[in-house]
Image 1 (cartoon, helix red, strand yellow):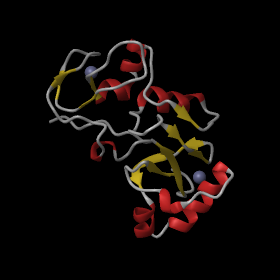
Image 2 (cartoon, rainbow, N blue to C red):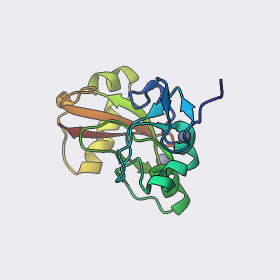
Image 3 (tube, protein in one colour):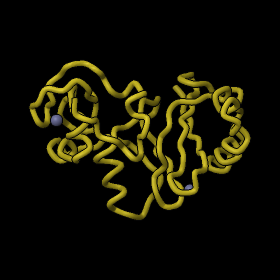
Image 4 (cartoon, rainbow, N blue to C red):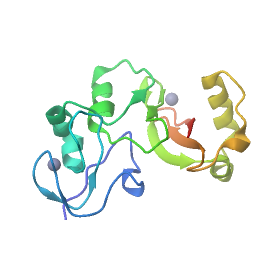
Amino acid sequence: MRSRPIFKYHPKLYESDVVTFEKGTCQCCGRETDAYISSMYCIADIDCLCLECVASGRAAEKFDGGFVQYAEPVSDPEKQDELFHRTPGYISWQGEYWLSCCDDYCAFLGDVGTEELEEMGIVDEVFADFNARIGEEFDREDLSENGVMAGYLFQCLHCKKYHLWADAD
Ligand SMILES: [Zn+2]
Ligand SMILES: [Zn+2]
């Protein structure tokens, strides 16, 4: 089996629900694949794109679209291209909002709630950072993994700081 592409900004992609592990035919390259993503922000109806076509940018080019809805600003156009056009998005209520730190996009680590953050021992630092980001005091009791108020955990690739984003149904 060929090794699967690795995504710098989405290192745990293959542990998430974004990838479908079934046989399919890629709409971009026409090849058979056993792992694919089934959505993209573009005009065409997408239900099967192999990860090679995502990683290479071929899918984004062919269908003139991207995989990530929103992100915090990062100055380097090459990094912008890698995130929006060569990185699979994540499942959320309101569309991706990819956090940045140290002028680069963070790695998306997965869904979290307050409980998971407590287990990781980072709950206080992450909420302090999140409150500063949104400019108000967030009620941490509300946050649960895949809940009505869902948390998304990121980590800076440079300073290694954890960052939280959350959205609601
Ligand atoms: Zn393909
Ligand atoms: Zn950083």
